[in-house]
Length: 274
Image 1 (cartoon, rainbow, N blue to C red):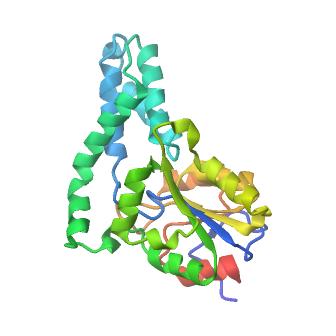
Image 2: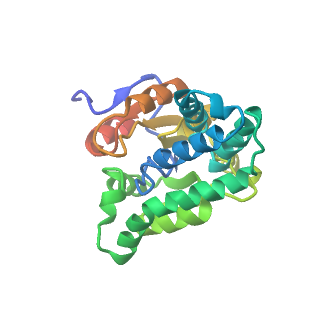
Image 3: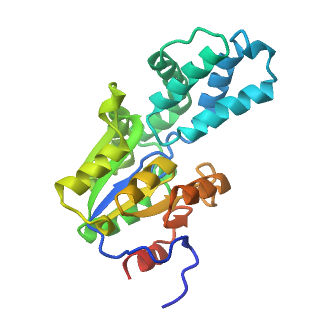
């Protein structure tokens, strides 16, 4: 067997090759439509913190780091959790916070202004979906489909947007297990719930489940049920290289392998199935 260089193996003894179910994160794992969302959320949150009585007297760099830290900590969860953290920090700094839902709605409005052009071009067909897919995504989904693997999509983005954006990218058909996203009642959904339900309803042993994600949440959730976790340390802007921050975070969360994308599918298939 030729050596695999595309795949960085973190835990070589984890069982693999007998997968029947696959769980995918969406943003940063398949879709790049929302690439750059941190550049919207962190400045907005930093402004809210700066406007508080105590925040006005804090070093701007300290405020920025505070916002960055809790945004990054909650990345992979539903957006509302980042907004809950914002409300808590505003209160700590002597401010009167809005509801987390109000913060979420304002953030999402700002984000939609950033990505509206991308969505419009995809709807019109003036740009190929490949422009906003992580390299090799369709080929990987085809591979898993041909192997008879049931696929699920579980995202921290609101479910209506996940359905819409998955359609625009042409990937909906692959997720025969279902597509799941954040709900208004955020306590009724989590990636952990989806994964645990898959295991429970199908009476699975952990090694039958494989997960793909660029956030620590889905990696931890997959490992909690004994599954195989593929950490996607995608550089969303460049689409080619490893993001060092993502890599370290995914390894810490328990990823079994690290890859930048799915561009070298033969190497990935060789490691996972042979």
